[in-house]
Image 1: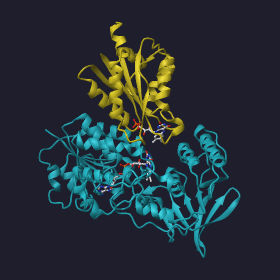
Image 2: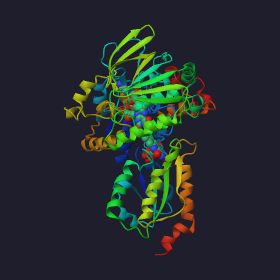
Image 3: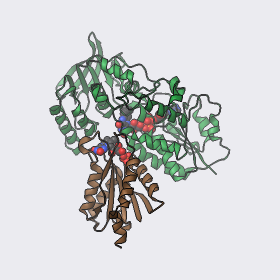
Image 4: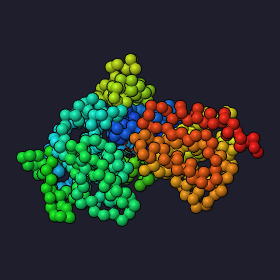
Length: 406
Length: 156
Ligand SMILES: Cc1cc2nc3c(=O)[nH]c(=O)nc-3n(C[C@H](O)[C@H](O)[C@H](O)COP(=O)(O)OP(=O)(O)OC[C@H]3O[C@@H](n4cnc5c(N)ncnc54)[C@H](O)[C@@H]3O)c2cc1C
Ligand SMILES: Cc1cc2nc3c(=O)[nH]c(=O)nc-3n(C[C@H](O)[C@H](O)[C@H](O)COP(=O)(O)O)c2cc1C
């Protein structure tokens, strides 16, 4: 008897889970459902536009749908068109791999003032996510709070010259938006010392090639461990290697305390080893992690998932949805392989469960073949200096006007 | 020929390529396919030729699934005299100074234990326009067609 598994979310966690399940049993019915018409989650909408090599995993994911016969059900949001309960009734197992898309707030006075933008919403707008808000005005002196990889990604994108964005898939709108900003200074603020910051030294090294920036570092502190020493080294090399027109200041050991509206923009107070300091900002981008956007009741779901409490729900969670916003793509793969083992060992197929028939009455569902046509169209209409032209609006993604030409 | 196709990977691209090489060769050869993570250094002796696909991570380091293999190679000091391997790397030209260093380091380690490299180590560039299988399959076929790789089987 064929067992039926539904996976919510076609990001890395969902795709690797489908891949691993179908490797163990090629006859399983594995259906991957995503709220967006396009698959691959943050590989398309989070991994930086100028890191196309990292997006190469999408070729692997495509094979899951083409060769391993997983089915993609795009443009269905679980919790809206279909409820989790309905999905649980229809499938022998449900895997929640819905990620975490809400920006974590600073939790300090003034953290909701206009001019403060979460890195999730900023990157979604930059990378043309269908649900993204308009690109915000950052002014000439933005401050980025956070020293993880996302903060460094944002810094790099903001600091790249048009020439340095060649070969990326940054869209026309975001490209024009970037070019219109004449940044004077970009400040990066982190609570920890440089050695204890979360960014990878490799990502930092990459900044040394940027022509527009001139990096300085405030109170980096010291490091005792290998990784920490490598971060300090990478920073020192960065300072030595850069001498462009845009000042980039890293402030480590600077804990944000409050944000205030002032006539020139925003004032960010930070506590440093030298006492309290105020940094002036034309805008503030927070890159301090992600949380639930509230569209799925994550807490309840985590509780009701099999792995936590209730085996009768046949429901599992994985990836950022389960672990919080930690772990990159390799970790998603590792966890997915372990989860797939577990799901396989616990699966009890029931022929009365209706599986994908559940979606018969849901309007505007798109399958993987639709994505293949959109993908081909995006690749074939790319401008000379871009590898792809992303289709941005949901209506257009669902019904591309010139699809026949692709 | 009895060929083992081994992969060292972190996000699965090398595994996919190893699968493709395996399918391309399996009609004419006896192929085996395994993750380096599940392979002991002395198992390299079991095949007439080991085709290894290995990516690069961090600052030109080995990918996660090749690390346990490399550790064992170091600790066990396995003698690989007589072992033949061909090495295909996966890399990204964006990491200019460490491009393909994962596969390079692994090849050096094997050679250091006495193994012989057959053919030239090639590295696919994830930022380039070519698909890895379009380069790797002709590369593997050329190695097998050259007397070099066959030498091992006729010498038995
Ligand atoms: C800006 C940014 C840059 C990054 N860069 C890198 C990088 O360069 N390299 C790297 O290794 N990692 C990177 N990461 C981390 C990596 O993206 C994550 O590890 C990975 O995407 C987590 O995978 P996931 O499948 O759990 O979540 P996601 O990728 O977020 O996928 C979740 C999917 O679920 C869908 N979904 C959500 N809710 C619902 C619902 N109710 N119904 C149906 N579908 C739903 C979403 O549309 C989405 O497609 C980056 C992360 C960010 C935020
Ligand atoms: C964080 C990171 C670091 C990388 N470092 C290197 C590197 O130093 N040299 C290189 O050639 N490629 C590097 N790459 C590129 C990968 O080797 C390439 O994407 C490859 O296709 C990954 O294959 P895998 O999925 O089998 O691990 C790096 C990729 C990432 C994400």
